Length: 279
Image (cartoon, rainbow, N blue to C red; front, side):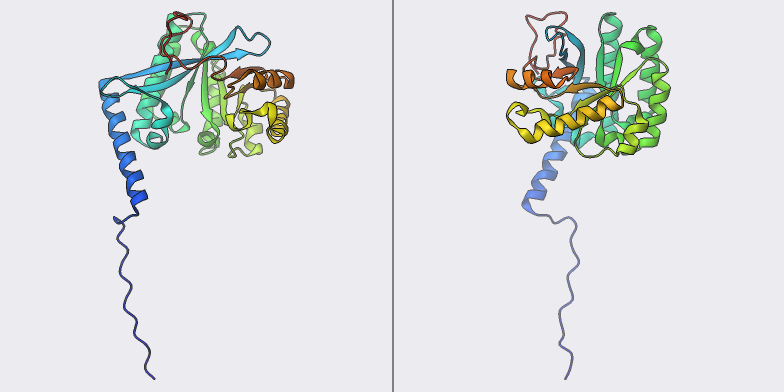
């Protein structure tokens, strides 16, 4: 009996995709184009959000400067709408440079300001970012002591050895480091012991609704214990109501951040607190 003949499988056309894949890819292309045009026009700003002292909830410990881009109509586009798409590209490095440059300018203008700026570990080896940082630190001996660089868990774990050396060098110059989105599931505790972050920011997924969520209460207590063991200052992110703030105060969190205390604003709130625009 002869072998049954089957038609040869057609080669997969890599350009063919499901409607959903096509829509996602098209959205990402449009996002990249929009951000690229905004960067070319220098239509980028920082939005500032206060990080409040738990012991003094009326007094910010520092502010976080969050990158925003403006589209052709002047509409403010938050980072969550583009940062994941641009993170691995040259455009992501350009955004890091602009955020750092604006943050350093703010620090130079106000000697009482302490400011956190987000960065990707990918920018450590980016020459223009390093030049921007060194130039800014040289402007004023106190700027390094007032600058906090925030690195997300996912970014730090891409190249932990490089991040560790980079942090040691800059900490010797007075710069502090915050581990952002802690608890999102990336950090090896072996590396956490070696990183020596100054500040640990607990991811909002554990903080939102914590006053009525026993699971989040237990998990946040565990994360706080880790931070205290490694002598790290703690910040709870994403606080939106008084109940959660009160519960976290009872847990002993050092600082709190979220819309309950203040939304990000493109007008520096320490300058014009009555007219700050939300972004």
